[in-house]
Length: 150
Image 1 (cartoon, rainbow, N blue to C red):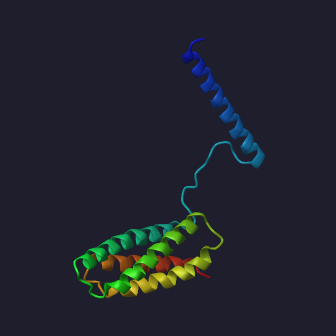
Image 2 (cartoon, rainbow, N blue to C red):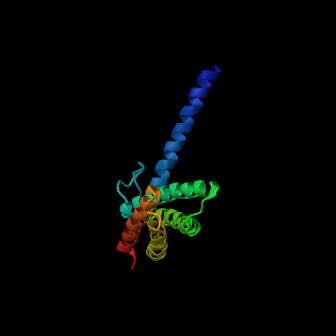
Image 3 (cartoon, rainbow, N blue to C red):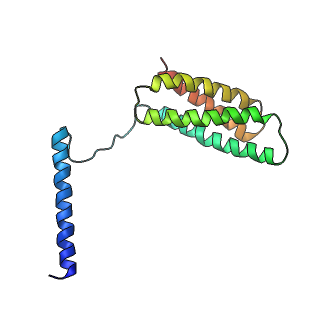
């Protein structure tokens, strides 16, 4: 038996072992051996809104850093802090929603406050397109959180 044949036999054996362990694990947990993906999450609209807020918030922070680097301030320091809080909070709630966490409703209340604060600050600079977009994304995320906050 040459090395190629030995490699084929070994690979085949590993594949059989993996298939057997998958079937055994499925039997043990009473789940089907074939992995099935959940198409459509329960909180998909919240996940999407939070993701959009993070994306827009990161762009807003980059814009603020550019303004700061040019020596201009325009009072954006407080806005940058609120956006930074929002990015952290929306990242967290997106993960919790994706995992259908039992703590999601509690977190939604906190994120609502953070999004409202961010929106308020960003609207002060609504003449800047990215600031306007960030404010709008915060409003959407606020509304999605409100749907599940108890």
